[in-house]
Image 1 (spheres, rainbow, N blue to C red):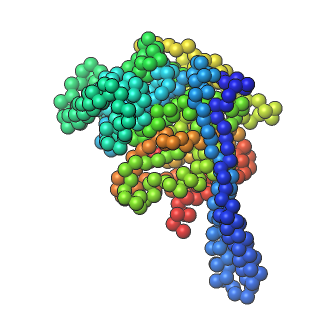
Image 2: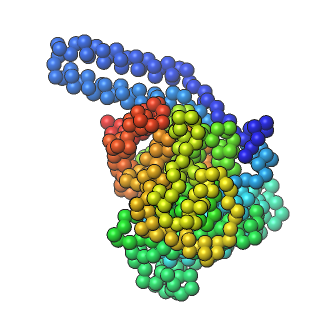
Image 3: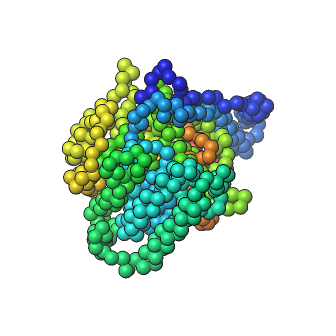
Length: 540
Ligand SMILES: O=c1ccn([C@@H]2O[C@H](COP(=O)(O)OP(=O)(O)O[C@H]3O[C@H](CO)[C@@H](O)[C@H](O)[C@H]3O)[C@@H](O)[C@H]2O)c(=O)[nH]1
Ligand SMILES: [Mn+2]
């Protein structure tokens, strides 16, 4: 940890407020109130129509209050990675999760690019491990990752040597990235070689996609022969192990297809994240976990350093249960008719939430403290940290996992271990489909089940336990993902989001209860209510 005498790792600063705009907003609110009072006073004279108008205007006014609340105290965070490198000689380990679910809808080359961008971040490689969860249980995904790990042996040193910014090769070679202006000696030669190698990688993956039937189901792929993606045992493959623990080598890369059985609910992405949490727990047990969707590549090579500045830089850990990078998209349609760029939220909603109890968890581009995911609360009358009891009923039946979780909750740092057969066997057990039966996984521990917007629900429950969260908006942006490619796909996605959000608002998990009975800040409750109400607001 950084010592308190030293230079800061980060700062939280209020954003400048436009006073003219603020005055206008207050004036509008005042007019709303006058109008509502006038309606009320003259209700008896005009009857039903007046009442209807009163109700509509009240709804409008209520939404105005919600909007103002979010935008009232925006903040920004600044980070100082150079101070981190000077003052924290032993940087903490980070486990990085990438989730993919369907090799057809989410082409392996996209997942591969996300993985490559993570393997190449500026952070000591022996402190990183990348886990890919494949809910599609596809040999193509495994094959692509194996090939990508070979390419990474050249790509990662190349990126670090020339300080390349965008380390997802498909973006780097797409022509949007600038070549270094000073053109160092040998650069062009290496650049050309790298481009060739990347094209070969694409070709190999494309060939495999076209000729899946001819894939040789022996060796690494033997588990995939006659596989049924809805009914199969766990498959875990250590694709690359940084055995010598080289700080300038490649991070571990592990493929995980958790067990699926038709009579067991797999809880979609939340289930995948919980399985990866346990698998990584018994394998590397890093105190911090990053999770990204398979189509969200790291666009800024310093993402882990920034996040660590924010997670280690405040005296009170309570300041940050998680660090969230806003969601952004590339290749949106001209003029962005569907608002996929989410431009307005970047200016208002994200900094606004950050100024209350912290940004919501957006499901991707987020660094979590592992102990918070294990259910650690800040709610103790003496102000002490409290944790959920650590036993099989809560965490499941793996002694290896219980031991690793005990270390995390008691702040003990695990010694790095080899990813041996015994370790992989333990990981197989915790990725089993029945592992969570009669445990607290999905309720008090891990990602919360029961919502299609599990991210918002999981984040809100963390806030309700008294934690704050932190926004990280560096320039260039930390993560960029693909936007829905057609209006049809966009509408399906939006419908899913809107339904999920409304379900949370009207369930026992509603922020209204969480502010009454738990530690959700009242203004944060209003901010969540505003967000959960996004659908009806959009269309009213
Ligand atoms: O059974 C599943 C279903 C999905 N996923 C993965 O989850 C991610 C998100 O799913 P997607 O279908 O792409 O949903 P989006 O609407 O694009 O995602 C946004 O909304 C989701 C629900 O709120 C969040 O989980 C995401 O992080 C957020 O980016 C993808 O990487 C999927 O591969 C799984 O691993 N297993
Ligand atoms: Mn997606």
